[in-house]
Length: 413
Ligand code: AMP
Ligand code: GLY
Picture 1 (spheres, rainbow, N blue to C red):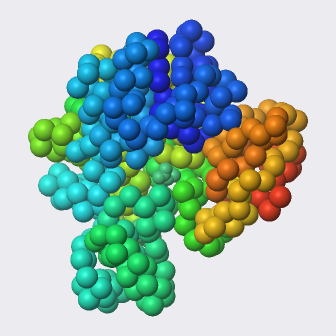
Picture 2 (cartoon, protein in one colour):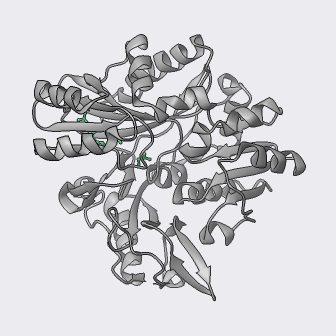
């Protein structure tokens, strides 16, 4: 199959690797990709958020399937433009992508579908936000309504910090003040063709920058899959009570969701609740879910893109576990220092490296952003996979680079 993968992160590198691992002779191109992706497939320097540019490229190159990695092209309507020209695309149109692009929209859909989520109040002014903060009490949860690249959410015991966060994001639109939910978090990916929903294997992401869940939220510093501590029947429950009602609600509003429904969940004492929906594969969770997927990824994505999921066999996963740890630049997430050389990538063994923000200059890998790369390992046990990941990280040098040392520790003992 001729496949175009849009995006330039470690998630897209993992998607490309998974497609290549099928050994099915796919002709894969990534746009714009990064230095790691360019080492395995051709990359093309086009802006993935420009619908007309992407569509023209796909038509000129007889692309049979477009896989949209990040949220920005989805929210920009790239999937709609491709579909209008008859190109199969894995990723929702602009209207359904609002499930991620607007937290207000997501809350409305959840209410209409009867999906369990925390209480939330939309505030358009600081006064409304302050009133809601006092209503819910500490710990305070304040979220930007629109896309914020992982920076829109603040969870804090400090009311002044919550008010400052609200004031800042109110300049860009509304904010949501939410009730605080306590419990283990789960990321569950579901593939949807607009009607049928198929779950993948659950993963857990580590959002805070430092060990022990200290420091600010990030895009994600590491992940592992599966989750051995999940109650029996958990995935089925999420499918029945969350994913299916959400997909049905969107279909009934004539905005079918074709793509990856990412359910960000929290298991509270009173049951499972949705913290957020995303409209695409999660990063870094994809790096631990896809290496365990035995079923060919291309078949699954193509079936979703063409409305044929119901006739597909259920996705199967290997019994091996997977762990990934993100190497970040000094200063991430606030102000990452970029442009520094990365050494030792050729020396690592028993792991795969999913590149996120890398370039090659004069034959040397350079870090070009905050989250630089994900080191991924599988193993029979979490202890084994962790050993592989952290031994590899010992070999990799990036001045000022940092990573968490406690990823999957809770399941490795
Ligand atoms: P989000 O971007 O909405 O996934 O939020 C980022 C992180 O903030 C989540 O992974 C949670 O750890 C935390 N968070 C978000 N909403 C809540 C909430 N209502 N209660 C507790 N923690 C939350
Ligand atoms: N890992 C969180 C996300 O992809 O949004």
